[in-house]
Every structure is written in C-alpha cells, then in structure tokens.
Length: 417
Image 1 (spheres, rainbow, N blue to C red):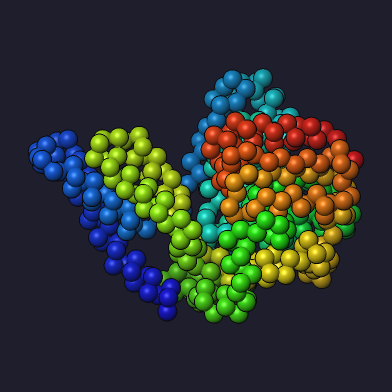
Image 2: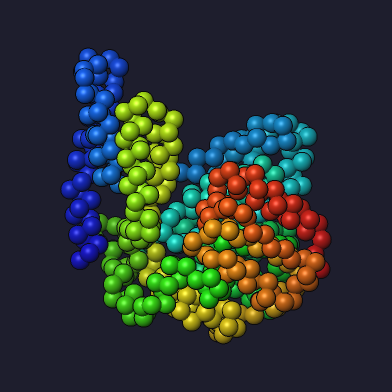
C-alpha cells in the first residue's frame, strides 16, 4: 500500500504545485501591475518554493546538443544504439563540416560510460559525458525506470545486469573500447569483463573504475553499514513494493525511487533544508543566477527511478552482505567470476578523498583482484578534497580527474598486451 499512498499524495499535491507555479509566474510578470506592490516578491518566492517542493520531477534530458572540440563547436545528436526493456545504450554522435576536425574525431578513442542503476537517472553523468565528448566517441547506459517496464519483460537481477554489460561491449566492439564505470556498476562491469576474459573473448583496452564498492569491507560508510546491520529479509519486507495500476509496470516488484530519494535526503537533511531556504532568500534578493543553479541541481537530484526488486536484493546480498567478489566466491549464471583472468585490459581506479558513499580503498581493491594485469598497466588515483560526486561531476572532475582519465585512455588506446 505504501506505493499507492505515495501516488495518492502525488495526485493531491499536483494541482497545488501547478497553482503555485502559475501564481509565481503571474506575480513575477513585469506587465502585471501587482508585481510592483509591496510584498509581492515575497509571495512569488513562497509560491515558487511550494511549487518545487510539491512538483513531480520527471527524468531530465541529457540536453547535450554541441561541444567545443578541436577549436570548433561541433553538433551532437543523441541516438539509441541498442534498445532493451531495462536499458537503452545511447550513443552521442558528433558531427562537423570541417574536414580536419572530422579526420581528428575518426581517430579518437571509443568510450562506454556505464551509469549507476542506484536511484538516479543516467543524466546524473551529464557533465561526465559532455566533458568526454571533447576528445572521445561516447556511449552511455541509460537505464529504464522499472515502473515503466511491463511484467511480461520478465525479471531483471544482478546476473542480467552483468549479461547486459557484456552485450553492450560486444555491440560496440571490445577491440577499440574503453569502459568507464561510475559507482555501483564497477562491480558488475568487473564481473562482465572477467567472464569475457575467462572465455577467451576480447576485452576492452582499458577499464576506469570510479568510486565503486569493489570491496565494501574497506573503510565502510553509512551506506555499507545499513546493508550489514539488517538481514535480507528486512529489505524484502520493508523496502520492496508493487508498482500500482497507473504505470506500464503494474504488478512488478521494485525498490521505489521515492524511498531511495528519502534515503538521500536523510543522509544530510540540514543541508537540504538550508539549500531551500537559501533558494527562497535568493529569489527575494533577485539573485537569479544562484536561484537557477538551485533549480538545475534539484531538477536532477529529485528525479529518481524505481529499481527492479531482483536487482536491488541481489546487490544487497552479493555486494554488501556476502562480499562475494573480493572473496572469490561469486558465480554469475553458473560461471565463477575471476578478475585474475583479465590480462590485456589496462586498469585505472579513481577515489575521492572525502567519499562518504564508497570509502577509501573500496575501489582500489580491484588491483588486488586483477592480478593478471601487469603493474605497468595499472594506476590508482586519490582525488584530494573530492567527495563522491566530485570525481565525476563539477570543477574537480573537469580540471583534475578528466585530464588523468584522458591521458590513461590515450596511453593504452593503441596497444594491448
């Protein structure tokens, strides 16, 4: 019933939110004589705050239409390269009418960015993708909200996630591919490449793993502690709910996005409360730039998706409770995951010094597991002053992390072995 109650609440707040939005726009309209009355600005700011607190946040668009590359502004078109019920493999195709630019882009590395399936949409990596597009051909996994997937598509567990990553790698072609996994997918990506290597298949030229729980036993965070202090039965009984009838996925069991969002807020409620108060004050002062920054951040932060229950529970048990990957005991569809089988892919791990989601050492653990990769083909970077999001988004990503990732990819783009 919790999901249904949430839908009733959403239906109730919807008209109020729309009324507040319309009222704020009307009071802010320069042609409206009321906009000049004393107290009108305060009313308009209050209405907009009510609107943003009560509105339904839909999936944002990547909204990447052009980038600066090779001294020119080049057009970017978003295409679906592979369409599956639970994920679309998106390609950001670049276009130019300058012959020299076209020739340069032809020879640039191909990158697959594996986005997390952990509550937020893949658009959370917009800054990652936009920055990479300057000097790379870019693909990204764009996960589908589970409430939008009909039940006849079947279940989707962690094994299915691993198989899908393998499918994406084969579709693009491993021989000229570099894979970047951010946070949660570091584990299934390492599994997928390990299985491909063990079968004798081609593997990507390089793997870049950023802020992921390869071994959550190292420097455990509050996220890790929650998973270990409750049995799996608690998660099944308390956070798994059924999609109601007003969605295509009616009847599917999911971990709802609104619960994940509540968890995000609960990790630091005072910071979010202060942020909304500052937004209100910015509107009163007419500080439109800071107000717009707030809108952009929360349009992304508040947009969440449902995860398939099978995937969520598999991840809790396999990654955070039993630690099967670092213990060498993980079987995927009957095949043992052995990262030591990877021999021809280079490995870069990136961690944030202040990461409160994947603690220091959790991602670095990949080096111990990938013993088949020579030391000269491995590197580890700790980004000083960076939290979890800072290693893949924002100024530190663009100015500190990206140049190191770019140089690592270039180094291993031409040769393997």
